[in-house]
Length: 222
Ligand SMILES: Nc1ncnc2c1ncn2[C@@H]1O[C@H](COP(=O)(O)OP(=O)(O)OP(=O)(O)O)[C@@H](O)[C@H]1O
Ligand SMILES: [Mg+2]
Image (cartoon, rainbow, N blue to C red):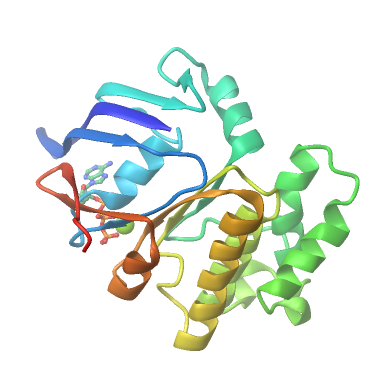
């Protein structure tokens, strides 16, 4: 993934609001990257752009060497389904689908005949074997977050974006989820990009960036 001079502004209440003001970032295969920054600094906006879910107002983003700009919505969606996992801050589960069906969805889109057994195994890994048939509205916030994580992991994406993936979890469950992400990174070479307020998690990553004033600044490490 490569982002060059990415700018994002939105129109709001008649005036233009500048969120990102020239972000540059290159992700290398298999690395783990943390993005930290104050609430409202644009972290979720940036993640959505890097994953091809939203269009920048300026600059270029390429996923796996393919510039996203010229691709239409279908081509972007295909690229995402094939390679990208995304854990939204607000989960964004399908409300009419059970936990199991939500996690099966990316596998079914990929035509995987083992969708059900793989989705069950992943839900077991996040500790939700007892909640397979629950609709999202009958799950707690942390349970919904774990379903969202299972859905993002299940198709073994090459690139996983996670927006505050442990924000709603207790310390023990959060630690389990984090170790699951790092296992995926080690076992399958998945590149991880995590937005987090947790400095311990950020320091476990290969690199960390601070989003401030609409720009990314790499944090130096000893
Ligand atoms: N479509 C939009 N219209 C108007 N304002 C927007 C829009 N999208 C984002 N913003 C504003 O841009 C800023 C950045 O939002 P964003 O969600 O990216 O922040 P964040 O860094 O993820 O914050 P948090 O840590 O609270 O999740 C916010 O102040 C938000 O109100
Ligand atoms: Mg956010």
